[in-house]
Image (cartoon, rainbow, N blue to C red; front, side, top):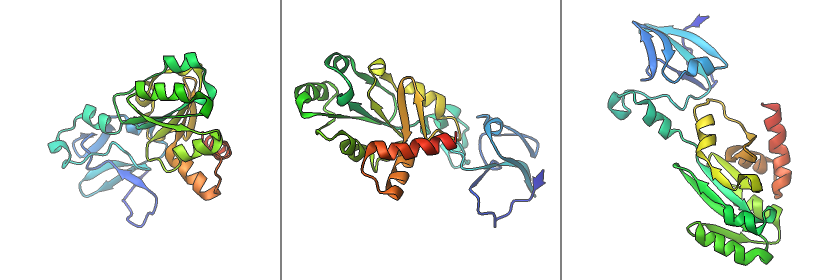
Length: 229
């Protein structure tokens, strides 16, 4: 179905018409260099005096106009700009001494590492902090509240509690390559033995529910993730 764009429509939409990555046959759009048309859940064919094009429901983070990159449609550059960011929290409450010695976090993009653990593991925490280039360390006997404080208000794409011995060798690029290109990303998902949680979703539900316990907030986040999967 074709329609003329309506400025009164209040839904968030993305017009492909002026995007550098839109593929045209004369004045009619026939594709997208990033295959976003194939992934779109709602796709509307639209037109105006300049031609026929598609409108996607939602915000496309790969929309680039000719003012970007001197008008050159560089796919790799655009993909690098939408790389996900991460906050990795090493959960010493859940890992033993051998696990802590094996921890290694790798990523080419934006990320930070924090450590949270009990007072009785202070020496191990400080050694790990030094090995990981003096990342932040938080020593507290209260795991649920401390975990909440660490992730509440963060502006990264996702946070991850590294709490599984099977995942202490963590390469964040694997998750990034799988999900950065997707227009709709998971709220919370188990991936390679760890749970990746949207910081935006956690902040929203934590703020609206007013809970200070990490696990209580995560119960809400997981329920919404399940309903929206």
